[in-house]
Length: 260
Image (cartoon, rainbow, N blue to C red; front, side):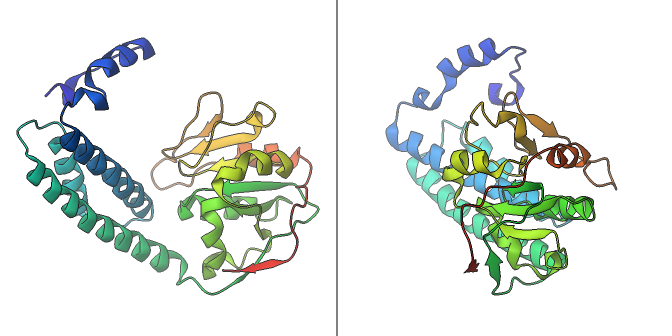
């Protein structure tokens, strides 16, 4: 099918094609809605699966379902009942993907513990890390150890504070700020560079855009991207670490601790 073989070289070509094959090109609202539900479900499954893969854990059945589900969204012969069945199957594999990721995370970093998380700041330059790729978290902590650069979590990376394996790093200070949707204000006051490991980035303000880094499947026009590592090696975070050393320490926006 064209969905598998169509190619383009320019942004304009993609925009023109989108007018033909966008969501609204499916006239039946029930079919359209079910296809959308399946697509969003698969996105979630894929996000969890890739993080598990980064830690060396895979389940071929999940990959096969992703292929099956995406193929089904282009199949005009499927009925509403067929797609409802696929939505339910998507839920089943969503649970399996979460179980796979939990196994990967806990096998690698231990079982999360009830933890007092510092929400204040220290007087050192620092890196803020967001998203939920714990492999990136581990490699960043290793590479910043002894550098004079602190590390703070933000948003979806807050649970990293609960894993035993990360508690040995004295420069892992705690969590800075709140949920992802407050990042514009909080990145502004953080002063240091920010690393997005999953797609919780919102369009950055020009005032701090030069401090934004992405990695993995995340990207945004005009910001720096840290590429994947060569097989058997760690990602190279030296550029963001060097950037952090030139920045002022974070501005304190909270004090004390939270229980997580």
